[in-house]
Image 1 (cartoon, one colour):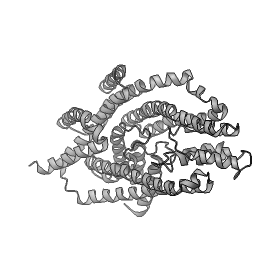
Image 2 (image 1 turned 90 degrees about the horizontal axis):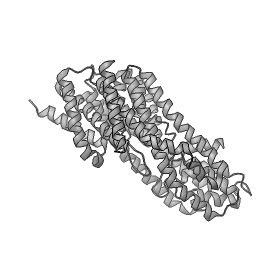
Image 3 (image 1 turned 120 degrees about the vertical axis):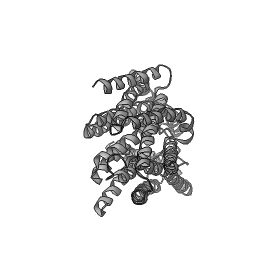
Image 4 (image 1 turned 135 degrees about the horizontal axis):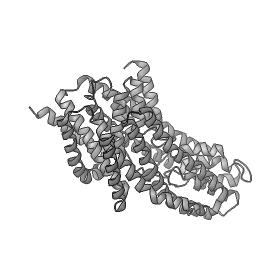
Length: 223
Length: 242
């Protein structure tokens, strides 16, 4: 990876990381988008797309309700695409998903840290906030955005570093690489089934899910 | 109104355990409060901003409905306590409607469409369709919400009882289940296209075993940690197996 490529990935990481909660939520953070664009930047769109689709299956489980915390699959997808890019065939995909899931989990932890810093900021300025001091309100908000921007870029950089480490010093041989990829794809599909059952709400919803699975199976068999 | 709509995109930018979206809500509503009697810095403006910055949490896309209504109520000179009650009453229903429509309905449907198109060999169309389908719903809800809240003020509850909302809520879950169900075999075949028969059987076995463990472990660990655990076990297995 050369410097302009790293700079572009970090810039994309900023957009993706902030889209998770703080700015927009236009779903640039979804791995399908984040991984695909990262693959294009890395010059290996197929690996980026595969990492994106596999993580998208994991991400179906996320229901960002209320104060819940959830993994940052978008930044994970960037790190995963960086790990898998350039590997022959699909051999880098399993390891890429491993790095991606680790970064996604770190994203969840780092988001919690940002929220704690924001809380402390709010506590220190409670009186002025309650008085409706617009300057204080605006500054607290901007500091919150800045913290998340630092989190996004920092985690994107950590993800790229992990990707480089995994690519250079990975002890994975050919058979293990295939095994890890098989497990990554299988577990992604299994968690997606679990998420789909939950989304269906049970009862007749499970019938709709079964109908979808039958229709999809017929599609791939017949067409 | 446009400034408030743009600021609403950052309503969760300063999310804290103290006030959740409260600070972001105040920043978003601020442009709508500048015309209060006394102008910026006046007593009415400061009191309204103080109320706006208090604890608030709802679905981020529907926050505009509540904030538009609150801003209208401030302009109508409604009593402060009543305005705080309005904010409090709206949080729960807007949260549950938004969760059902967006996170349970629109997002999985858009995601499934994107995955299917990518798997069928249309990567660019897949990504753009995902973003297009999802954000049509997303942006529609955001702009409709702010405008409707501002129009209806204290009567904003009427907006939530519309037949369109009720129908959308009813069909959100089943639509998502159908779409994701269709996407799963299509994605599975695409992801394993490079594998031989034995490897494909291996993936199928992992899906079956994984689905059983997912039911037990995924709710406790979350999918990311559950997947990471499986990959670490596979790496260890590969290292130990002769």
